Amino acid sequence: MSLPVPRLGPFPDRPRAYPPGQRPHLPIRPLWVCRACGSPWPCAEARLLLRIEYDDKPVDLAVYLSGLYHEACHDLFRLNPYDGPTPRELFERFVAWGPYRRSVADR
Image 1 (cartoon, rainbow, N blue to C red):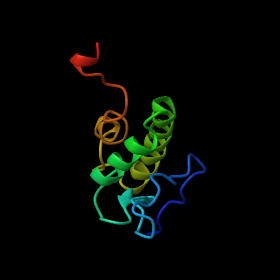
Image 2 (image 1 turned 90 degrees about the vertical axis):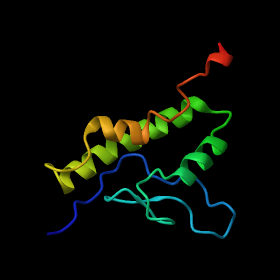
Image 3 (image 1 turned 30 degrees about the vertical axis):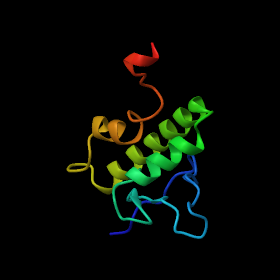
Image 4 (image 1 turned 60 degrees about the vertical axis):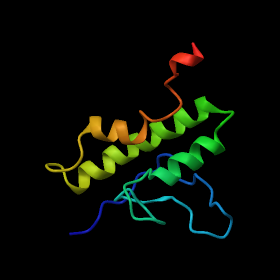
């Protein structure tokens, strides 16, 4: 069985490597696991680095994560259409942790 070829959606090139010279916490497509730690991507380190990198651009982060969510849904469904993660699980993994929620103190 050959793996599906990833589509030409958003290229997962963020977060940048930190500290410089270390392996970046980027996904291996089409499996969507972290190159650096092997956890499901975005791993905790990638989430932290993405929040820092997009600190002053929350809309850009939302668009980036939403595009990657769409690509991950496509890739993972093609890999395993029966036992793979559900769209809701992938939404929580890719998008729900992003810059959308405000704490009660911010209101």
